[in-house]
Image 1: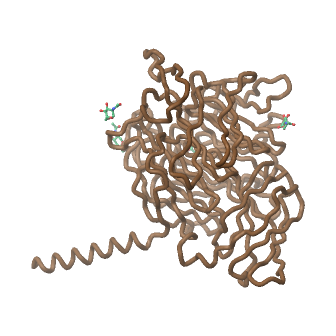
Image 2 (image 1 turned 135 degrees about the vertical axis):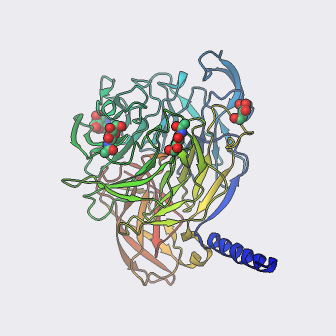
Image 3 (image 1 turned 180 degrees about the horizontal axis):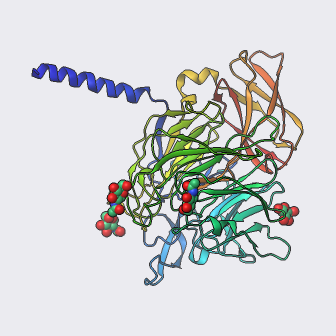
Length: 537
Ligand SMILES: *[C@@H]1O[C@H](CO)[C@@H](O)[C@H](O)[C@H]1NC(C)=O
Ligand SMILES: *[C@@H]1O[C@H](CO)[C@@H](O)[C@H](O)[C@H]1NC(C)=O
Ligand SMILES: *[C@@H]1O[C@H](CO)[C@@H](O)[C@H](O)[C@H]1NC(C)=O
Ligand SMILES: *[C@@H]1O[C@H](CO)[C@@H](O)[C@H](O)[C@H]1NC(C)=O
């Protein structure tokens, strides 16, 4: 071949791969270049601020936020003496200010769990060391005010909880499920008389490397809870502490910590009588115990109607294998699968081959045509990274720290950048389709009708959808309490040009949508508005 031919072929090839990249939907941006902490747990509040949380036993990272008081920190290695730490590892970020503000927390938050309470207070439970039984609260505030963590002294968890999952219940109590060596559940506020309720399913699901930590907990619209650990799942009546049903085992290997797949309950819709659970990805069972960072991850997804009489898992493969991915419910009801790696398992120094391509899971499409590969990012987000839906429809990506302490001079360094991924519905050519919510009630009662006033492209092609999304507690590839509910809507044309009203019906009860604050999105032709928050009570 002549050199000119080679150059020509090279140019054609370069042009081709350039086009492939350009064609893939979605865009990336860096929001914060140095957040000072790698967020292991991330939550969006109703004031459009983001609470970032890492472990608090990282001393001396010389990162974090300078605090007023130093305190003694337990060390991870048991033979190390406690060390003085003068940094804080929690912060609040207001989405416009590039400098997050420090929050103060002293007890160890490592691998803790959380959930918003009906009044909008963030409940945060457990962790390691002195945080094992700790209960903490944060009452979010607007960006002009000052709010901070409160670590409760008068009440603690009945059992230490490290790697547990929280889920708000229909009556506004929160159930805290499992954790390392915690084969039980408990409630917040505690049951009369306090204490834990044994939940042997978690022990039954464990294998030789646990695989039952951070269980996937979903409140079904029938009021019972779907709990998934390893490859097993049950329908649990939390009121009477009875397992009502065992689902078939999910093939394709373990799915929970330390073999992190991820899981969502698809958007609830129609008469809210059914609920579908999806579990995707995970590690090879041989990866964790052997510390094999090159054992390929799993690409399999299972999907099951958890409310069917004789449910079966429907299997399908993602375009990439993935561990430590995050499944984020978008305002449309589709799922964004993002972050994670293609080999290894979950834990410190346990993974390799980052999966930089997000994937869209189109939940309403039939088997075989649900996945779409999206524009890849550049920042590996492995162990201890998070993904959260923002009220403007973007997805916030934070964290990644696959090391016991902060380490910036290694192959997958501790990641302090915060980024946002914009799904295709935010692309410029869809700008004019994007609805704008003008008016929405601040509070909505179960079963009530209410109106939303909207401006934007006149909805001549079908009725816009109104979907309400909870703000989950994202950590370890599972977003605790994540929920999207599609409301019944009818269109009411108003006299005024350019605006219209949507007559909506609130969810019937707390089983469909537990009490608390929700982001309300109007979605027209697949393009969501910026959400406004409302309190469901
Ligand atoms: C909420 O429901 C649970 C039953 O699952 C019950 O044990 C608890 O006491 C209830 N909480 C309140 C505040 O009524
Ligand atoms: C579920 O996990 C157990 C324990 O690891 C294993 O023995 C069993 O074969 C798995 N089931 C399926 C269907 O893969
Ligand atoms: C790690 O996993 C790969 C792929 O499964 C396998 O080929 C290799 O032998 C494993 N290495 C060890 C040390 O077990
Ligand atoms: C960071 O990681 C590198 C590579 O694994 C290691 O050699 C180094 O000791 C680590 N540094 C710290 C401060 O832990």
